[in-house]
Structures are given as structure tokens and as C-alpha cells.
Length: 155
Image (cartoon, rainbow, N blue to C red; front, side, top):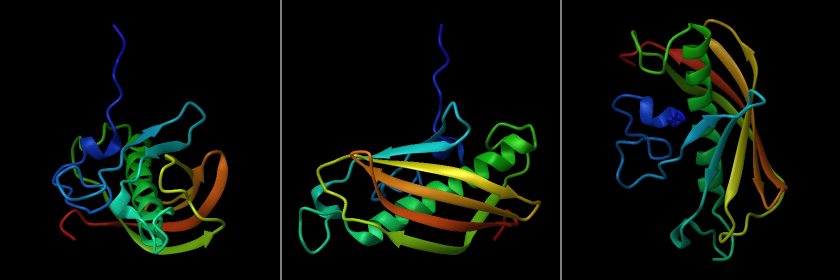
């Protein structure tokens, strides 16, 4: 019998974030997983109401949310992995966005699924740097450099 991988977000407790919260019924509900090459990946299919001014393209704010949330959840998953624990096992680990620099390369067609790839560039006890790329139809559409900062569980 094959193990079924559970998304990072589905393992986090009490997450009501608009982008990544499994507990937010109105949110995007992204799902992130480890890829075989050590990167974290997320696939997302937009809905028509996620459009920009021209309805054929994905809204830039939604793109930013995808990049941000996938990066932060990937940093959380890496911290648990580094400590040798399953996500949400033992004391909770939380990160917030310390900074995020986004380069928008080209519009994303609203009717095409996107693929996000997060590479975890550096890790220290308090900060993790993540480079996250957003692709549509194999085209790089946006890239974010994210500094994830570890915060106490009660933040």
C-alpha cells in the first residue's frame, strides 16, 4: 500500500490565512508538498473571480499571495524537517514574512493552472530565505525573494 502525502497546510493547526489556511472557507487553500529534488511545489488553479482588470489574467495580488504563502509554508515545513519532527508534532513552529521582493515577468492566463517552486536558500535558527518562482504553461511569470522570520507560537 502506498503512502498518501499530506499537504503542509493540512498538517498545520488553526491556520485561518487567506492564502494557505485550511481553516478559511473563503481562502485560496493552496497545497504545498516536497518534490523529489528537495524543492517545495504547489499547483493552483484560479477561479474567474481571481482576475485582474483584464479578466483573462490572474490578479497580481493573488500572485503575490500565492508566492508569499507557499514560501512561508515551505519554511515552516523545512524547520520541522530540520528538527526531525512531523509538521505540528510537539511545540508549534510559526514563521511570518519579514520581507518579500517580487519581480513580475509576464501576465498569467487566468484559465491556466500555475506551478510554484520554492527553493530554500538559507536557514538559521530564526530566519529562512526562500526563492519562489511562479510558472504558467512552463513560462516563468513571477519570482519572489522571501525572508521568513520565525516567531513565537503565540505571536
